[in-house]
Length: 559
Image (tube, rainbow, N blue to C red; front, top):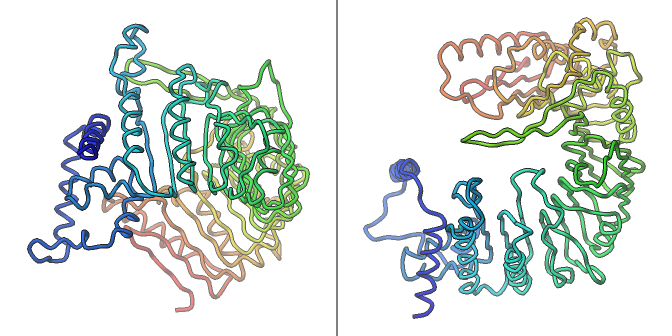
């Protein structure tokens, strides 16, 4: 009887906290159900094939659902009533409380305390779920909500939930204590409980906005993947984590700060990701900071995001095989926009055309440090700096990669950088060109846009005899198919087809299929596609494939 009452209260909490909030979603669900019924196999009356599956398969299916959805399956039948209590995966998320009036800016503190708090419902739902849960071991435990350091109850709730997860020998643990914006970060994040530092079963640990202060030795003997976000990390803490994680293979640092040197001494670590450095969290007026990376054993390195005022120096990555450089060093200021309906942060970039002198030194030094890697990705902003180096006749990097990925918005300034990377990559076998989901525009681009990029390529004598002599595969990924209409894109495709003497295949794909194309759109795309297919090719075996109205156009010179 008590279990039935607890289960009913669980549904009550989740119905109140996760209400079905609009009729449009119900209509969409009904449309999907109608379509599925049209294509579903004909079943005998009363036949329920899903319920005939063994519990192990049903639990596996439920483990892919958010916990609130898995719980709601309990209303299907008696067999399903408590099936969710044995699901080995639990995930809880407090959806944006701002929309519920929880952080209403016009409410006084006394009134604020009396308002209905969605966090109370969230905590009650999680606590009741854990009370009924009976799986002996957890594969995954995830919680996501906005953590407020000044509310001590938040820390107490987390301590209780983390204890439950570690007692259940959880394998994958995620604590996403998100904030609305990086400027909202309070240095006093959630302090990880001491018993967590001795967890021998966690193999994957993701957390954000937490503090790491182990009192004794850290012992994460099973940990293979560690992802840390929005946290202060000094060199000593990083060293303790690496020494206490003998099987660690992957380390990701997102929007962290305080460390000035990454000395990776781990014998097991193979992948290192550094995504943005939050220099605003450092005390005092920091004009610039030099970050050194020493990691002689890693195989993969990614430097991503915002590195304003950060001079990144790579000292030793001798075993590196793959590298991705998609960072941005532009000097900026954070701005805040607010009206009666919305509020958001944006970045306003200063116009500093002379800044390229500092940028090009750093980018060139990094590329020189990575000259031995086999796979290299160059992001949109880094490509712009390489373009500036090219048009200013500065010494160019000399990568020896076999697989090169270039992220470019294919602006006027893109071609000089692409040209110099191709010119200095004589062993290149695979070329990937990706259009970014968001374009980079900065005043520095004006330095390059003053030049005629096509004439610049010819003046640099990029059409030399042995260019692209190893290139076999080219893949171009467009954000929209309309991207193939630009002069720069057409010039690049024609150059590649004309000079890649052993090319086997060029594939042009879309991130997204063309939505409801008009006849004029289809006709224009077809005309451009036929023009690209008509370009001469130096390779007698080259195949060119392009998208067209959800399908593809393929042209093979051998036919």
